[in-house]
Image 1 (cartoon, rainbow, N blue to C red):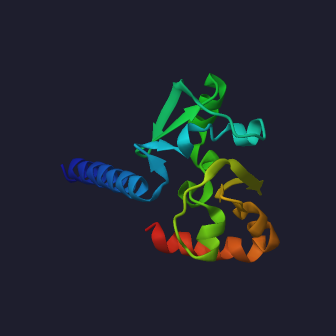
Image 2: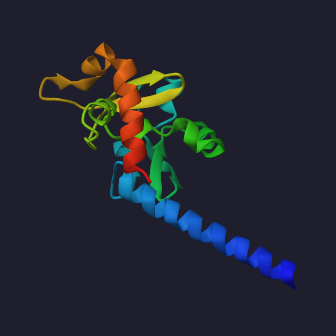
Length: 153
């Protein structure tokens, strides 16, 4: 009897934690109406080394956020390990996160992959923040990690 109650308690605890994580993700991850990266395929950045629009036919919702994929293969790759393909800092501009700690929208076509991680950048009005990031990447990355950890809790 006690063992059964213990298992029920653990199950409920896991469900509550999962729901709380989804709420936190929806609150802090860059999305429009639940769609991440403006519909770009997160796997294509790694496999094709380019920003590719996803096909609405290939979608997957992970933690309350929907991703689109250019192909069924990319969808299956993402499903196997979503954390490996999600952009850093919730898909917000990496430079802004490192420079000011602000959540700034991105241009999905302006990106960089470093050590197997995807970083996205703002690039509008003659302001390509990837250029600024490259000038002081190590420090900005450390600052961005610290700032994101303060935001995403």
